[in-house]
Length: 196
Image 1 (cartoon, rainbow, N blue to C red):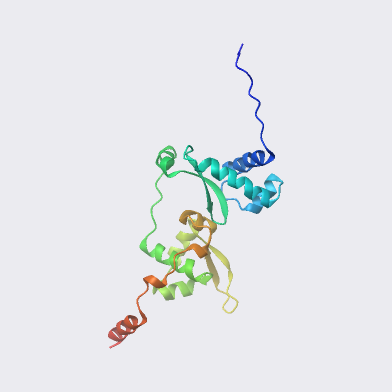
Image 2 (cartoon, helix red, strand yellow):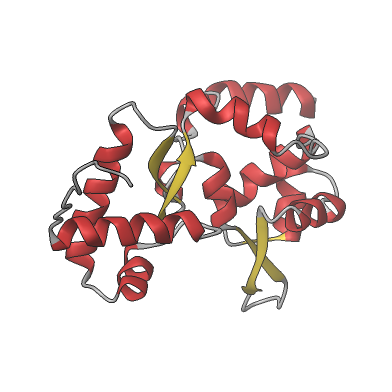
């Protein structure tokens, strides 16, 4: 018979809620918003946010291989950078090919101009983008977003999975393009050179 004394574990209601929130994040297949967590926990969003703080503290102490991240407008538990390589080895599967240059360019146009039509994307890229859009849609990075009022053409936008893969919470966190664009004067000179 075990002679060790029984340890009485007392927890506050907020600790109990933090455990519930943590369990919800573990079983979720995608990031969960504050409202989703509150509804599932049957608690108010303010208390759930406080519980998320406790979960984040527990996982940020450096003793866990899990971290709490705010991505794609919600919260998710992810493998820490230290544990990521081991996790990828565990779930080895056929490597998904990286996106082609054409796919990356098309994805950038959709991300910065959304919602945008296929014709507009083709006009910006200067080539047909049908196949590339199909690939991006199949991979879950882009989705249909209704139709354009004037032309009836399909509109495209990025998905929450795109935000999740990029590791950002919203489109507002995308870097600004202006610092990477050439000055207007140099564009005019280039255009003049090619038109003569």
